Image (tube, rainbow, N blue to C red; front, side):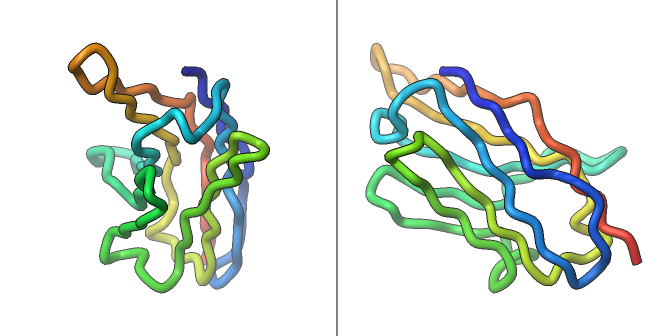
Length: 118
């Protein structure tokens, strides 16, 4: 599976961005899809998840501000980010997880930079 993220950029605190992640195969063939982020000098952290049933989960730091969703027709995963804060600054990565041949396989995109200024 190939994943291509887009939508990052520079935004002022309080602003919004929508990230997109286009998959090379139907997202309904993907068990789980996640958004991660990695800030300079920090470990990569899970931001939001959506599983095949459509159930979602969020890191406490983004609950109520970020929304993960998917568009099956366009094989695209989204992350709508609102009320952005400087601490949201990071490279955001899309991950797809597929259970195949009795094992979980993870696929990552190349990342998209989000910078939030005060």
